[in-house]
Image (cartoon, rainbow, N blue to C red; front, side, top):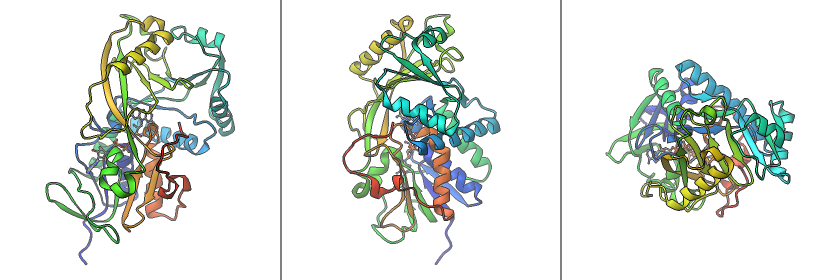
Amino acid sequence: MSPSTFDFVVIGAGCFGAWTAHELLNAGHKVLLLDAFGPAHSRASSGGESRVIRMGYGRDELYTRWSLRSLAAWKALAQRTQRLLFHQTGMLWLTGMEDSYLRKVRQTLEYLGIEHESLSVRELEIRFPQISAEGIEWALWEPGSGALMARQAVQALVAEDVRRGLEYRTGAVEPPSRKRGKLSRIVTRSGESISAGYFVFACGAWLPKLFPDLLGPRIFPTRQEIFFFAPPPGDGSFAPPAMPCWFHHPALVYGIPDLENRGFKISVDKHGPIIDPDTECRIANAEALAIAREYLGLRFPRMRNAPMTESRVCQYENTSNGDFIIDRHPELDDVLIAGGGSGHGFKHGPAVGDYVRGLLTTSLAAEPRFALAAKATTQARDVY
Ligand SMILES: Cc1cc2nc3c(=O)[nH]c(=O)nc-3n(C[C@H](O)[C@H](O)[C@H](O)COP(=O)(O)OP(=O)(O)OC[C@H]3O[C@@H](n4cnc5c(N)ncnc54)[C@H](O)[C@@H]3O)c2cc1C
């Protein structure tokens, strides 16, 4: 048998693939990272301008711990690359009285010793006078959280690793032709054949196209729309340090302050219609804009007539309940799948990479929640 060219090939240079390649490289392996369109390109889920990193996950300790660990890794990346990749804006949760999810966030943060503070409506109004408290009963403040500059951060990570010995290539990998046994090699659309000891497929919303039988029924790519609005001229209260990242939990609306003068970002976290990431029209639709604008005017009265400066149409790659899929392929012995970020995966990139490395190179026990076998074929969202 001829020796493998690479120890590992990671297919997909979004957040999950880039951090997986990083961790495997750190462990001393020869790694190739491949992407059809380039790291954090404009249609990748990781290609957005910014992503929230928050610690709160209801009663869910696993994701809270992963966020905490990942935040340290993102900060270290920013430090090493001397780039402003994380803005510590704080995270503000807004809610009504009957929100058991947010009470559980508070309990989990308390239990894990993560800094937080409950705010009454009065305290909210004093601290954030640009936010209307209409319909809000209390708020939770995570001062250590904030926003990651998503596209820049993934691209900075890949560039850093290329300097350290990672091989990166642009190439579109064909769906595996073998159904079972060892895959041993992948073939790209341009006819290149690449062999390796192991293959990690971190292809986001494209995973169902690569493994249609296995993942077609288990990953649901949905259309999500994001809008940026210009703050009033000369008004700094919608940018840090005055404005934090925020999430109105019961309404499922969230936002990121005006970072790098790109505008005040707002989006609805509710899942949109199922889409195909290759053919979906990337022009925002008028109804989604009307919903975003209505909420903007209600919650941020000074932004009521703000001009929209940019819009983006992106996709979530949802699993049935929102837990990631990070598992070995059940039939292909040298293939692992890492995906199903489900609208909340970006922040966890470093923890995902570390977990994949642990599964592939150590005796780390697999987390049952990430198993393919745990994934249903109908959507019932449980993780936010
Ligand atoms: C609008 C929006 C807002 C979000 N907000 C947040 C947030 O605030 N906080 C948070 O933590 N998360 C957030 N998320 C979720 C997060 O962005 C995703 O979970 C995460 O980026 C997924 O990364 P990924 O690497 O799995 O996928 P992707 O970034 O999509 O990367 C997959 C890559 O695989 C490549 N690929 C696919 N097929 C092939 C092939 N055949 N050959 C070669 N390459 C291939 C693609 O080109 C792509 O680059 C949000 C997502 C969206 C869409």
